[in-house]
Image (cartoon, rainbow, N blue to C red; front, top):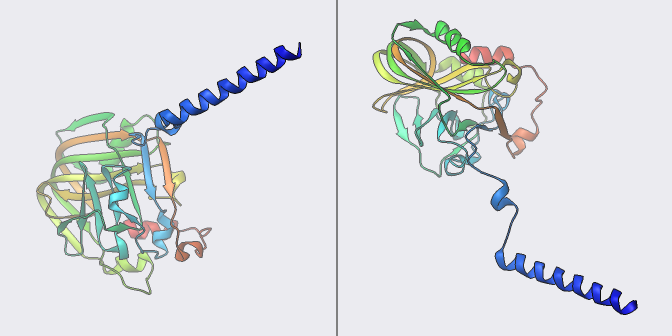
Length: 272
């Protein structure tokens, strides 16, 4: 009886050793099969809008790192040096002169939103439409207003008004004060793309609720943060992004912020 028990224990021990060695030889890791880093339904966000409103402009994430999370999006740069556009896998910097510059992987951002853009809805527009009506029209197309959406609009704009922000130096002033002296740009009969997102109202402390677009011309030479436009004709592409991931800043300026304050009025002034 004792001999049988010892034999069973020895066999079990041998099996454990075999499987342990086999696992090491194969180098099997749960993450190899359990997680896909390119989630096309994910909206990835660096920091939150209330941090930017408070004047935290030091870049932290490089664009080389940001590309791991998306090929489409908007944001800004270290020291608030202009408006960012991510389109078709390339990232562009629209500085305070309204001109577009390429973005090297080494540049950093304090705030950005990106996703891997894949259209879930495509709508062609052949009639002229004002910007407020365009937003309402897109609202009528999506299945719910309680989810985030990435939105791209390629077309011809009868008129378009945009702005950018100049590079800041310390001590930084709040964003609402920066935009009081923002350079403005006007476009007429210009072809280009609006790149941005439509976010639910309940995310107002995290990002801009409603619509937030940046504009870039078709030839990738000029652009800015959209303030208003009249679209003559074009194509609307909508990507449903129900998954949201936020990476917060790891710096003293963020740690010390009183983030329980309501910044809704400041945000409205900044966006308009």
